[in-house]
Image (tube, rainbow, N blue to C red; front, side, top):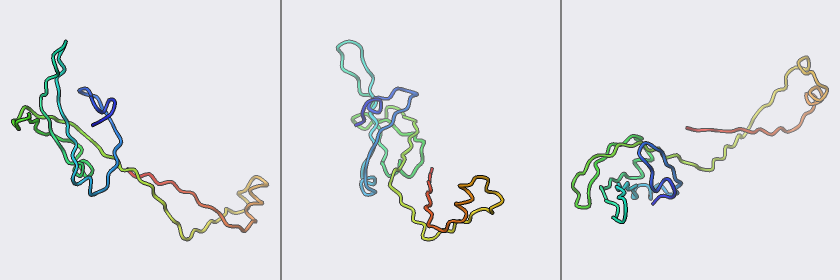
Amino acid sequence: SGHGEAASPRWGSGAHFSYSASAAQLATRVVRLSLRHPRLGVLPDSDLGACEVRLSEVASGPIKYDLPVLDAAGAPRGRLVFTVRMIQKCMLAVTVPWAKATMRSLQRHTSVASQEAAHRERAFSLSAALTME
């Protein structure tokens, strides 16, 4: 079950939630989308039906789905068209075993600090950022 807006999205709107699972869990779990029609007054909401999609399928694509909505007896009640995207977040360490830093020629250095740095022989640190989409 979702939380906040993810538990009860409205037509034409978006919702998101966080979920943590192993690859084996993704293969055996599903997202179940239950459709309900709210009634006014004291009458209970009416269940229109539900559809399911495996989390492993969501993880690998496609992002657009057109699924049959089935009632409790398994009879078709309509279709639900939606898009969903799963984003994987993980810790990633990149090791650079060897890097060479070359300073520009002294004629290009304009500040005293830059000229002094060009004459030093020391270890340098290298920082990098990686973005994957």
